[in-house]
Image 1: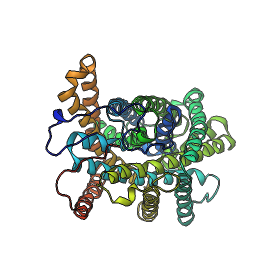
Image 2 (image 1 turned 60 degrees about the vertical axis):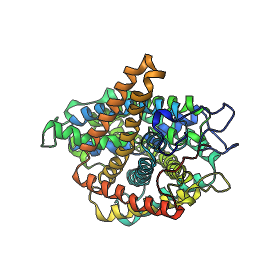
Image 3 (image 1 turned 90 degrees about the vertical axis):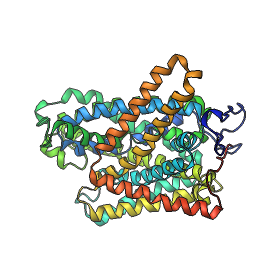
Length: 468
């Protein structure tokens, strides 16, 4: 990616790098992973503990939330297809940050990097809160807050240590964790459907409000389950042949997650009575116990949820440092975020982000009654901004440049990009006033950081992006 001061988009040359050179954002000789690990990163980041806690969060709306889930899935697939096109054109580290900067300039790129960074560490707080619910199937069954916080902090610290030890440890663990979490989810999404009792679903719209309002509110919560579809593009600098593998991993990972998400949620809704499901801290465990009787099946699912959540935390702890690393290389984040340790990982970004997630987790447990939903909505709001600008960047490029290079698929790609853009606005509208307020406040906190970073470098106006 090359950006020159004052040059219009059509005049900027973007030569493809030679096949034997390192793509933008990667040092020569840096260890990389292939399509399998990239797909595992997407699936592992998307399927964390969100899906295991989601049925309880959606149950307050009733089965109408399944309609919202289907609509969110359509939007997520549209986003995945948009990311595939963006990654093929700009296979650089940073994903949405790179796309926004290329299309709209460095300040837009900074806002994306800042917003996504908040999404990542706030999302880790939400993941670990749901993860604690399944750990407490075995320990701290009375849900004493002090012990819950201690378990959550351990769940944030251990993934940080896995990442700090190097990429080889990450790749091996991520593939194993993805396989272990996927098997029970596939089982619940297939065999579990045979045990559904329609009487358990309850009132179709249990929210007490309008259908449109219930679908929008449920959709905002359901979107949290798909956060992470862009992770392969964020870590593109660590993927072999990113022009090909990043897009494939994004689409394949999203479709696989969509299938188990929708069918698995239907199973839980149909096997656990509605009133009980609303209060459940481990809904998939309750569903497995209802299907098989006794406690062993639920305990097995709880173990899978624990492995799943830990794997997601490992993946997101890598991603949480990759976005600020890419921005720091361009001089838009503090320089320390760009530095790597002897294992080749951005240690400073991992440590700072883990500490922030830990702080948010402690605050959530001591300040919010609905801990999971409160943190989820903050994460969703800050994630919508990168999604919106990424879809807008793809649409902008297609309108300005696509007519000359992709005539055969122009209408299809424009339609997909417009759908992804509309999906982002819909998710934003359903987040609720409180989430919008806190999310906007956190986003605008980045403005003084941008001023400080630029002023320290003595730079005014646009600066070129790093191209290696």
